[in-house]
Figure 1 (tube, rainbow, N blue to C red):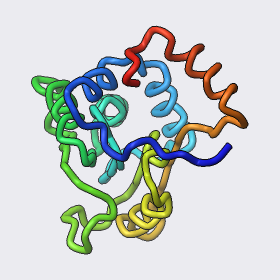
Figure 2 (figure 1 turned 90 degrees about the horizontal axis):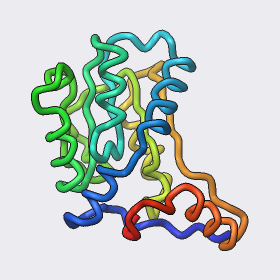
Figure 3 (figure 1 turned 180 degrees about the vertical axis):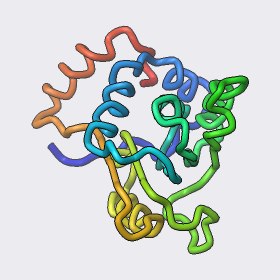
Figure 4 (figure 1 turned 180 degrees about the horizontal axis):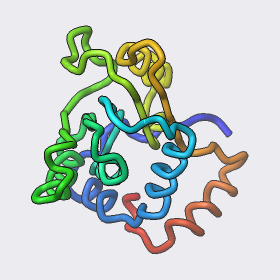
Length: 175
């Protein structure tokens, strides 16, 4: 099946709200669990989440590792707004900061060299997927960890439709 990127930004109240309210609890918990199983030494330091969306993964990682400082980056103001709402009043509010950023980042991005870069489901939005890898390389100090997960491309349109019907049948059509 030919690669067809989704629009890069989830803009507009309807789309961002639908995504922020969709039930990704299990898959996001699995992402954080798998990340921590693969990188058990990740206990403190600075983490950047590329394409953080409504920040659920940032918050889950902060809960699991209270010594981390996490910067969530997303280009959608609406998605970041949902993340800020989720952070307000939470114990993770001091640990997680959200930033509106487009990839590629400028040379003076303000995060310094980071200890870990993660990203979940951003690659399928990028016209030029190498941008994600270049950004991770730009951010990471020597020896930093990188953990990237994205959607698998089905082998046909029919398989793609069957997957959508199975996993998103009860979600808003905009998703």
